[in-house]
Image 1 (cartoon, rainbow, N blue to C red):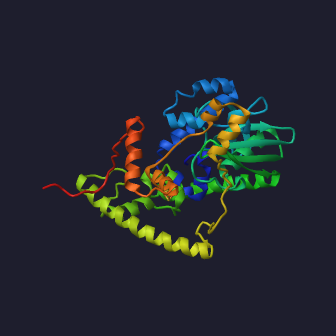
Image 2 (image 1 turned 30 degrees about the horizontal axis):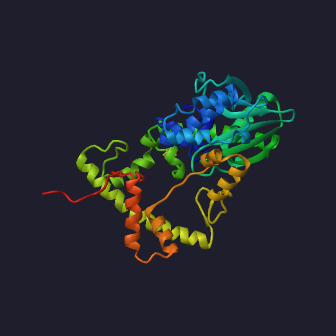
Image 3 (image 1 turned 60 degrees about the vertical axis):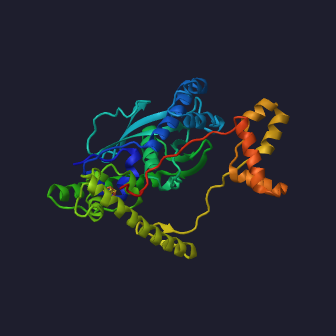
Length: 386
Ligand code: SF4
């Protein structure tokens, strides 16, 4: 029987249990690399202290990532003696037992049976009456509510079982940039027991799907947004069906055979996208009028997003200068501009000959070395030369 998912793939397995029976290939994209680096930085903060973590900054992959990591306000994070970073567990869904595998072991999990799940908790706190399970999310998409997250509940169940606690506090710290938004939920003994039952049901569903698959059949798949991160994507029959439509009979998903087929597929993708955009607009318009129920039980409708505070640059500069000094104030703000902004400013000033005024400003900026030119490149369709 296929193995149960690890903690981080738990939610995907709940969405589509048969995804476990197909060949799995894990891929890491650019956003994944950024996430790993931010996690690594916070892990070093916890295990060796912020000073050592900051010496690592500057050795990451890009200036952008270094700046993002350096701008993190560590006072908002669970760092210190009362927290453990990167703690791995092995939970047995049949025996309902939990073993602590260690701290900072990477993904070097031991060999496991088909009733065991391995997982790593980003940060764990163990208190007298509860465990606190924290997961960092670094992507742009808002995470679900903590109590709806299989990954957090899995960590909570494993830690609470191991430390024999009845309550778990579960938290997402979402940081699409350097500023975290924390969402927290409390789960009790009953919630954890129900989740343990859900895990056993998942195991049964995977076993049933595997039986069909081994007999040459097709288990019922459930496709949706979750497919984007599915390690079975390349082997998935549901995705193959879409590929068949796109590729005019060729069901090879990841490798489009010939250059001619690539050209055909490119045109088809454009048409699909145009149609999809049109449909999506209609659906969004209707959902903003009245929420629509989705097949997975969620609703599509207006939601109020998290409050993101933006600070006014000149005010920050003034405050920082007063409290600290001008150098520190300079380091805390950024001056940026665009040609359109210059035009708008000149209009506000009331210049009469806009074109001449702009020319004068641009010429002076260039003379002072204040302009650079960069040609952008992109892949687009263009007219074939004869
Ligand atoms: S790609 Fe989607 S439908 Fe296919 S196995 Fe994965 S989750 Fe299921």
